[in-house]
Length: 64
Image (cartoon, rainbow, N blue to C red):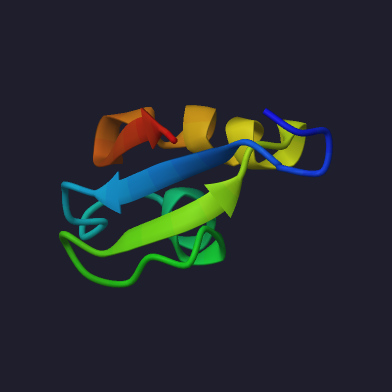
């Protein structure tokens, strides 16, 4: 892998945010996910990893 290629994560919302805290809803929305089965391709940064770890019970994460 070349130096300029950034690692990515494929994040999919698998459970509804309905009934969860405002913080979880905001975190999922901050990842760019709105509806169930929405997928976002994100750069693998510590900030994104922290957001994912806060809502792991709602998400499916694949390294890409």
